[in-house]
Image (spheres, protein in one colour):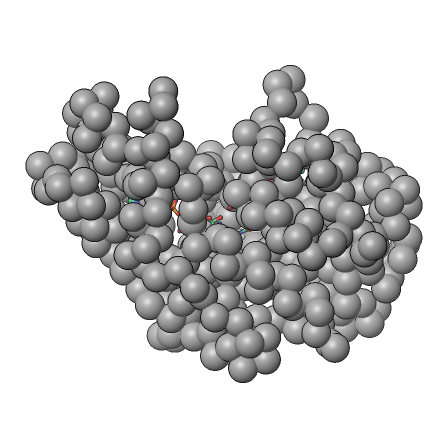
Length: 320
Ligand code: NAP
Ligand code: F7E
């Protein structure tokens, strides 16, 4: 039975990846940081099938000891301070976790067993103010937030450990991926939650920032498959993962509201509070390399994603 360690197990992607690896027969070790209350909401339904260990990307010793104890063949580094607006309020923490945390994990692997295969959760936010349309593995980076800057560091330190120490260190440059398990503050979930709240008479309006921002949105369940495929290749590499389509926040609203027979124009209020100091206006992937080499294709379309999220929130709110 292969053993895989997942940092960020309590997050959206950690929960989907753990499910995938369990199906494939892995022993899954999930790394969770200590908190005063347990936040296993996303993993509650399979928590007894995995091993949860305490660890923190800010603490080198905890990473070393968990690799020594569990002897994984694969490490998926999904942990991060991942919310872009927070990265302006807590830039140093974002750098410490999202950037330096990657080095701490790579150092732990180098000391304990440099043959461990490593996946780094890189991001399309690295392209920021895009220098090319669409973006592929060779598009230069121009990050627009402390989060994006931290991810650029994480990406390059992964490449550097691959080249310096011949480690199997892979960087997956993933475009936005969403699901009913997405955190509530991200725009897609904020919309799906508000649509259902309004439909059920529990909310009156939805306050949003920039409706014109365009993103290449896919389904998180499809994207974790790509992570696993990257670590099954003969050689470590960088891969762009996305759908190759882009849609504005406004379009997400239109589809989400109309799915419950409402018109978004009657409920969405623009609020400058949600504008960012520097915006990423347009992201669209060119995932041809992943299609060719990994044989990876997203299964869920944009419209299916939006309606899946609204339906899931409707079911959840109705139960409440
Ligand atoms: P998420 O839901 O925000 O999950 C982040 C995870 O990191 C949580 O489990 C969180 O734990 C954990 N974490 C935060 N700080 C930590 C620390 N110091 N030590 C250990 N764990 C820590 O993010 P996601 O959407 O699943 O994304 C997974 C990864 O992919 C992240 O690295 C993100 O930056 C990257 N990424 C995401 C997307 C996307 O569209 N979702 C696209 C590209 C890249 P708590 O539950 O305790 O907070
Ligand atoms: O914003 C606009 C906002 O916060 C998307 C993270 O997973 O994907 C995510 O980062 C867009 C932006 O995601 C609101 O200005 C408008 O243009 O859902 P988001 P993100 O910033 O793209 C990347 C790939 C990651 O790596 C990150 O970890 O939507 N927007 N109004 C809004 N955004 C939010 N959050 N809230 C609003 O009210």
